Length: 147
Image (tube, rainbow, N blue to C red):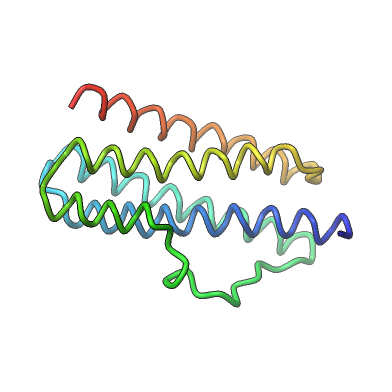
């Protein structure tokens, strides 16, 4: 695979994971009754939306575009569907367990991206976003453990 296409593919995968997280957290924030979790999930939804914008902007700066040909609505990971079920059952620990599972996929995507040969500023942005995703994962995990 050509180097330019490789990093576009890697970044596109990150964008998809961030979009899934944004949609999943927005849904969870709307449906969860716990005010602390509602606020946290809203915060993470906004964070993921900003990550998408930042990654798309970097691609654009390099003359590349995000391949948005697939509908994110149709590719939302099964985890976020399981989150919906937990929300319906009003099971806080299960909601946190499913959110953590979604975060596991995001952390793995960022880990993989950091192994790719990303150009300068893009690598810096991915490293920063990885830290944000890892912090979110760990916070969700800690909340799950204390639930």
